[in-house]
Length: 125
Image (cartoon, one colour):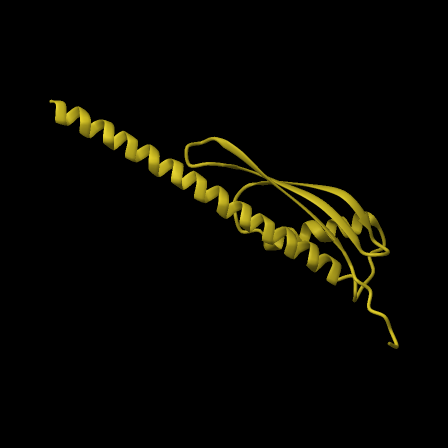
């Protein structure tokens, strides 16, 4: 009887350990993915300014959201806050928040902020 109780307690501890490990590794993977996706989307949005100019701040913001959606592969609710944007000189400052559910059903939020400026190449140097 004593061995059965000990076995059940150890089994419960093992199950909790698996859930904790899974949640920690899942959060780390999501944070890494979101950071890379936001960085790539910002870079892609600013690189596209080299060929065509954006006519407004809204158009540049829409291009960023489109580029971000193309990058994202994970399931989650995404919220984009455009903090600063300059469609003429190539400045983009965004804060992206992803809300997702863990394996145990809890809601978690990850936040990434990225600021980038388009570097101008000098002609005739």
